Length: 422
Image 1: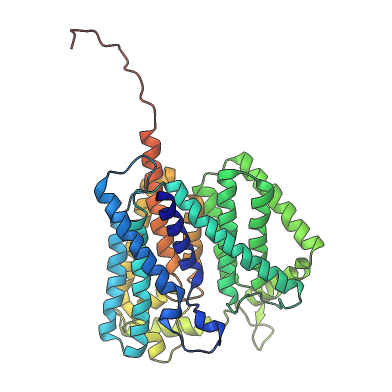
Image 2: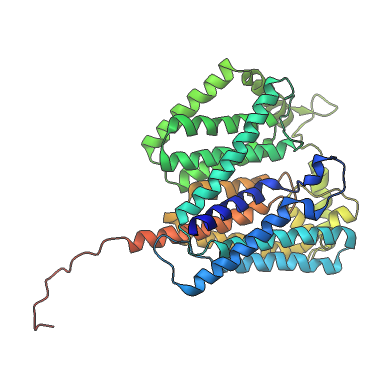
């Protein structure tokens, strides 16, 4: 039963992160109206809720054992506060049609994040992570194969994306592929398999031309190395295998020319040498996001304390969303919303510091990857993986830290006891 629970939980959590807003109705028509009952995300969250009830039952019947996960009430309370407040802002939102839809999405994020923290109770920490990352790596590897196939077929273009998703989304998914591969390498070895797979994810992310995604992946991998405390010997091995894999891909596969073109166009010309109307005017090209950022900031200044209300940004015709998590919270939830969001981040930092010796580097790196990526793409629902990964890292780090301390052998007394002497 325990195997079924953790496998099901890993599957549900991974698919929840990967599925997004995709629905089965898109199989018949890409332009069809969204139907909540045909979207896997609703059923995945319901599955997480059921497993949360099972976790609570197990929690009530026995105490935690060494190596098992434990929930972090501070982080769960912070999530309840943040999403509860943002949901309450629907009361002063300018449009109910936009705000109700967004309220539904925020409810999904809150229920899934809290449910995972409860469903994971009394489960082996390492095996929970194994189940989650197994599904993530399998799914993203299939997407990587689709991307390579598209590239070989001549359809990659300047920016790579698959299955109708955007380049920024695909870049983040390839970042998860890289971190998931490094997760299994750090635990099971087989550098010849996992490091080239991680390098493939990074290269495919570069082919998307997503500068935010590339920055997020770099930060995520560096976090993995620091938090995971990768020894110098293994770090050298990682560098050698990664260099070899990247060199082979660039020199002997069709990826080489496409990567050079993507790096030159998106990372060098647009970022460092973008010229708009004048050869002397140089600025960073942000794909029009600077206008969205300015509009979100101005809206936030108009309602600085409580914000303009949930989904106010699209309701007022300013755009679909600001493409920045903090600006979105500021313009719709005001300074109060930012304080609640800061509370979530601080609660996670507190939990991470307390369980720092047992933190999983890949999971923390993935959370940071999603957090950085959310500053240039996506909205509150698109940032759902941040909260789930923070809960996952927190639960498993506490358990692993406790397990290590409880398993430490007891030292014999300094002086043997003498009968009759106290």
